[in-house]
Image (cartoon, rainbow, N blue to C red; front, top):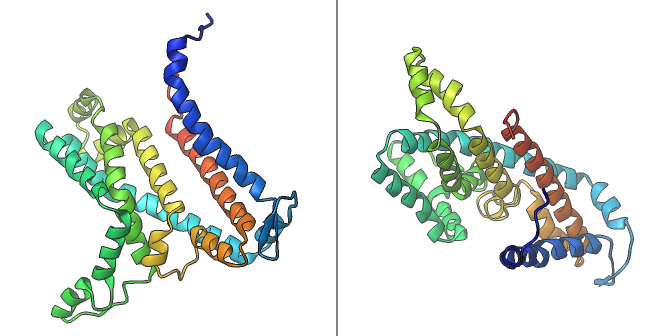
Length: 281
């Protein structure tokens, strides 16, 4: 049967449509058009030339930055998911309802402060004369070069992703049918085996979506690579800023941005397809 469009439904769906058009579709179309513009004498001119695509894709630094960004984002997604799962599992299965609400509240608190402020705080901890090296010095260790390293960049990614990943995993774990866990225990299935054979498959959608969000946020992040990593490993976000500063090459920066968007769309499609694989419609 055909569903007739009602004025009521159109009224409430119109704001979402307008929002998507104004802040996603139109900017994306403009970004695509901008990538074909040319820059002459530090001034952009509307054009339809593929020189920006050929130039950027022909540079080794672009592909090096692309590989670094993808590797960092993938590592951040995997590491964050692995560290967040014990936390979300404990909140879902070990805490009472009241304690669970407090735990969710504590996971939301980090979002009350700016991400940039939290990254600046990590500089105090990770610098050569910072808190971590001072504590290590008291036991005769260090100082170790912690700041401006790939490890510091990963710490920044964890700061950005960890609370959100815990919440997304938690929302999936709390809705698992407890009778499945009890049935596994009745069949003499150990706790660890129950986690991997029952809980993880049952919460696969939430776990994959949480990892996907961690990948997306890390892939486009600029703050951690520049303020904690020192910009030593060039990522695509850093390359965008360097490109715009080099002769006002906004069209070439648009090429980088569109490549990032295309990559994220492909990764999101693959991740969602894997998350819902085998599920009945």
